[in-house]
Amino acid sequence: MAKVLVVFYSMYGHVSRLAEAVAEGVREVPGCEAAIRRVPETLSEEILGKMGALDAQKAIASIPLVQLDELASADAIIFGTPTRFGNMCGQMRQFLDSTGQLWLNGSLVGKVGSVFTSSATQHGGQESTILSFHITLLHQGMVVVGLPYAFAGQMDNSQITGGSPYGASTIAGTDGSRSASENEIAGARFQGAHVARIARKLSQAG
Image (cartoon, rainbow, N blue to C red; front, side):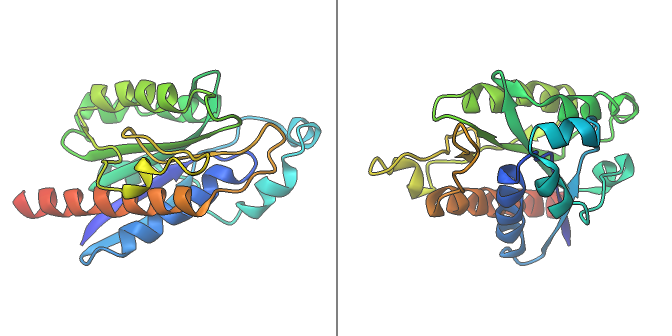
């Protein structure tokens, strides 16, 4: 079985919804299994409460925190992060900064890496967040995979929607009230399946 790890941070629930869809896509591929993990929170409950994020955090509290050895044992890792000023969130950056020993040992070299994201607005840095995230994956020696135009939803101009060749994404709205659209969920599911197929091929070749 090819093991695909979905690792995310979500403050208000938008990225976690995409993570579920990504995992669904992985599980559609025979011979592949998916596990969903979250990165540790760095903000206090007091701060999260002031930001109106406590309910969303409680909703994902049952999802286990990711362990470094899980990254090393996976065949593919799909990361999900909200956008912060056109880059990944601080929680994800802090977690990635803890993977130095994996880099030193070459533990992630040759594994498939992929990224999805969420932003408040349509042009709020979704593409730059994913592309800048790829830099870390490349330093780790990973095989970077995006969301190809084989996903027909990328060509849909009839609605406002996330999604790019770099990865699936959703638009949360400036007040966080917008839920991921059917097209955005479909893109995340497609990306999960696409990564899983590549990971399966690479694991069989090895």
